[in-house]
Length: 431
Image 1 (cartoon, rainbow, N blue to C red):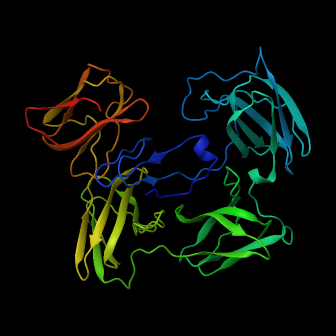
Image 2 (image 1 turned 180 degrees about the vertical axis):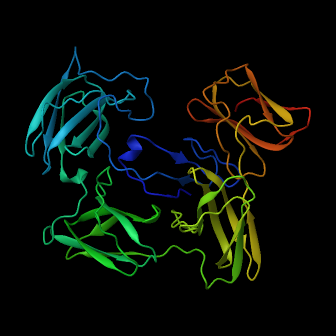
């Protein structure tokens, strides 16, 4: 299940993606495919930043910026059908890792167009307004026969002035938490757009009316602790308008019939604690509120019996523990946090990993069997080539291991590897 912890925006995913994949047993905290059922995505709140030449599309600084095309070319026209100025325009081959230089000659006013000669290949495009906000993206567009990029209202997401537009949406806050961010974006758009609340907040049991045009919209609601309270895709707004209610996400409650005690025996503090039903796609609010679960401390919650998913995140935004829990009626259930270990922190034993597969290994996670997440990549900047081996220092005991190739495919995984005091061996044979 993919859950959103904190505020995500579609434009940010194209600049830097920080995905934490959470598994029921062990889960990698790297940008890798899910290999079991549980997933969790966490994205940090950031305001849009002005784009400069050479800005990474992904997370690579080695690729050289793409210069304007020479040789065989086709015309690329950008038409500004928006009601705002465009001050930066980036056109880059889809195979490149960076956006390259700004193509725009001056400012592209509303209703104006500019044409450039570019190479006939798959291209990515990005337009930026004059306050540094990325207002439009398109990806892997085939421009081999020439291309016109129309910057239409579908790329933007801002409320209309009062009384304008042909419809409305009334947002009611029944979540029990103060809301600081509301994003309402046309479903056809790849961007969340601007925060519709601006400098305002929406208090519990309050409501706010927004003016817009009839369309299908995606909605994201975020509380003032930066946690996503609701996500709705393709919400229809037609006719005289619609109402969208932000309902509470089930969690700890005074009406519960059981107790959940969370114990933190780790040497790290916990700043975010999530408790949500397994049927929900988002984690919802931080159940610690403004508190911190310090190392060595416990906290008790009254909660309804049944099945729950839980997740603990430290104050550096690392997922420490994530698992399903069964809460029995009338009983106290203890959730003792467990955590992965840092690579090569030392130990009384070792594990030799031998790559007998026919592919390079680019990610290797080794985690105690008691941990519920994989933790960090133990290879770091290294690559374990076919026929090569590496030895890692760790404590004797039971360990889990998983290896990925450089295309993020699982090459091998094994659980409950017994590592004696004299050292152990794990051979990656591949599929």
